[in-house]
Length: 332
Ligand code: UT7
Image 1 (cartoon, helix red, strand yellow):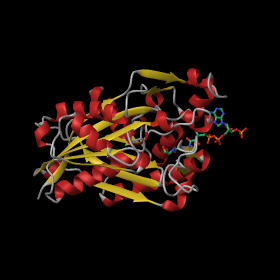
Image 2 (cartoon, helix red, strand yellow):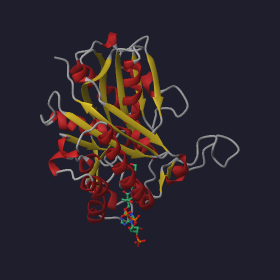
Image 3 (cartoon, protein in one colour):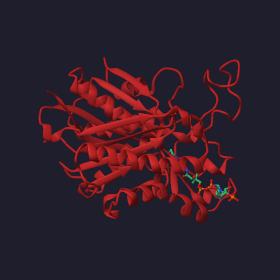
């Protein structure tokens, strides 16, 4: 039987940095409030002519180079994004494939908000284990600045742009295999985090978009509470299912939404500080890109070694949630 191995990681952030100080010139906020309530100090913002596919392609290029897999051997490209180049079609994954010179490939996007990377990891695992595909490029890419309301201090301080990507390949060595992936969703909480217009579910008669309503809206405080509860429960379940103790996890890489959420979940799971990866201070919340960007930071700092198990955990709009136990298995 073929197993799915997490071979490589790459990430890209646009050059421009938006600091808390900059935001305090735009809305009624302060560096002190943002730092204390979120842990965020700055986030990166893409240029006007820099699209989600550009960020995704740059991250994917790095992941490909590090994987040792030839472009011609990639047989599937999946992008997780809530800020695609085009909302209906074509998919951002198809555009990224072309930018990388990947031909004759299965390419599509999925929408699972901040849990997107864990969803595409589970899809890649399933396609590889079924024998249908051998080398899958998965990409979390977001230009959230394009769907952020910079008059709403409750959301605009949180989000940033960036992308992260990984190559998942078939292996017959079980020690290299992704151990488990859990995913879930509950539409009961759909209104906690949404972009209310631009689709057939809007209150309007046509797809015509009313100014401002394609921006993200969030009931922050309620979302915060559900996030802590769901993330903790989800991690406890995946650890119990696989008979692994939280103290034995080398790297806990949660979705980077808010330092206080990460801290609350880490404490509930009795994680030591050195186990928990934090990048929210540098990048803010980059939704589907946040986990692969954090894995890339860990990799580039030289602290991610072959065979070490990463515990991934995310939560986002939908509501969606997911967790994964993933050994880092670069090609030898
Ligand atoms: O990635 C997907 C999942 N997303 C999340 O999990 C995000 C979850 N939510 C959060 O991270 C937090 O709820 C926020 C950071 C969005 C807000 O923090 P909070 O501690 O929940 O604040 P709050 O909404 O309860 O607001 C507290 C006060 C309010 O003022 P009053 O009513 O107490 O006078 C807000 O108006 O803080 C005020 N406030 C701000 N003040 C300065 C809200 N945003 C700001 C701001 N600057 N940017």
